[in-house]
Amino acid sequence: MREEARAAAGRVDEARLWQRHMEMARIGAIPGGGVNRAALSAEDIAARQLLLAWAAQRGFSVSVDGIGNLFVRRAGSDANAAPIMTGSHMDSQPSGGRFDGIYGVLAGLEALEAMEEAGVATRRPVELVAWTNEEGGRFPPCTMGSMVYTGARPLADVLEVTDNDGIKLRDALAATLAATPNARERAFNAPAAGYIEAHIEQGPLLEKARKTIGVVTGIQGLRWFNIEVSGETAHAGTTPLGLRKDALRDAIAIIEALREHAHDFADVTRFTVGRMLVSPNSPNSVANHVLFSVDLRHPDPAKIRALGEAVAPLARKAAKFCEVKVTPTLADDPCVFDAGVTGAIESAAQELSLPYMRLASGASHDAMYMARVCPTGMIFVPCEKGISHNVAENAQPADLAAGARVLTAALIELANN
Ligand SMILES: [Zn+2]
Image (cartoon, rainbow, N blue to C red; front, side, top):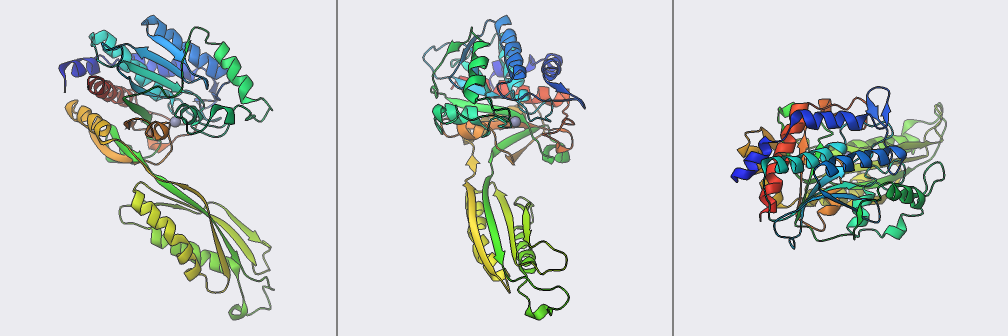
């Protein structure tokens, strides 16, 4: 590791980073210690203004794009070099916690501050981004800011989306942009040399393994299906079991067969049946129709493909009495993060003597879209009991600071390439 990377990592200020989380948590605070900071709301605007005030104290330049993604830039020595980017989001779930999203923004700002204080010059600029509307709770879909920024979906496509009060995204966005008049306008998808997103894990693995740093290898892929089982309804008291076409009995057999197929010794595959509609749904009638959902996830591209392809044949084989119809409803391939970025994060953790492990992300993040346009990686830090999207979400100041140190060192390494 470069000496300046180590020096800057050493300037990460745990107390300042924690204090800023607590200040941000006051914006949209709700009972139980959580936050409700919907995208493009008055609370979102207040969070943006606070971030810009902190950036202004250091004289960093700020810009904003057409969907309201906010950028804070620390100049590099080569003005023509594409920046290394870092960031996450400031919006929250309606009943959200104090760390989801905002951690990646504040850790990124802390990295810029630490570079300033250590007097480190990087060849590339280092740019912090606060993505608009990652949660999608008010204006679906989620990860909207990075989706539009990277060109996966045009801006015009999302402007007419309305929230539950009938407010158009177009108008909420205009109000948000008007509230930060000093931010320079910037184009979508400007060239970037890399992107690192820091985030709380939102799962229990780091805590369970007693590791401080998660080197995220990618975001797992998923396959969704609706499975319909059609039989015949009959009287529960008079119809012998051998004569029934019981749709619920077959549905249970299918679910068990799929669950068994999805089981793996390492417990990596996620298999969920979370929704079931039974007809006629009466205690003394045999079910003639059952519709249920299947949600399968795995980080390995070949594995998730094979798991998905096995669903229809397994379902048909497991059904003994009824007809089965399998409809795929969603297929996202896993995103595999860049080996160079992942390597830089891993060596930073090693050099700073922080216990780390490699793991895949179970949840989606803006990094998923950035991975399509530049080398990308993520850093996870533990959160208490893996609880997230909940007012009880919690993290330790020392873990947050450790993640920011790894981020600082990795950004400096990549910004000098
Ligand atoms: Zn998040």
